[in-house]
Image (cartoon, rainbow, N blue to C red; front, side, top):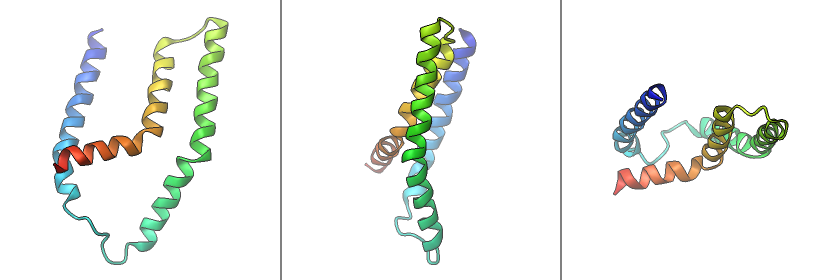
Length: 105
């Protein structure tokens, strides 16, 4: 129990440190000159990873958790990790938008 609380407190401290640096990262709103190909490549990567690839992996992970529940061999920590991971993966855009709005105003 204390290991879980220690991990949670470390995660909270890391998140607080990241949010503290968010205003400095948001100071530059335009892309720097010459970064067009890099921005396009990262946009393609984001679309690929959050599209069909992420959906297929998430479906297989949730199906694996369901199968382990069906057979009675579920490690609850693994099940919770899968569910939280799916929420973070598909909610990443909303999470970043929330952090940006909190830091900006």
